Length: 71
Image (cartoon, rainbow, N blue to C red; front, side, top):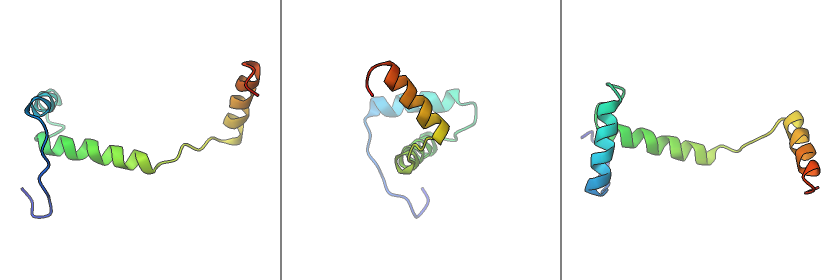
């Protein structure tokens, strides 16, 4: 384990499910730890992203909401 990591505990059943995914990944991930780090990084990255609509998308959404009677 690299020096700059910390242990995280997960259930054995979850570990085994992830282990199966790693095997199915055909080399995309070397091990469970790499898979878990990738997934958690994606989740944290997505939390910081804000969904921003273009003016055209926003207008289309408004039209749909009006048609449904919400606006």
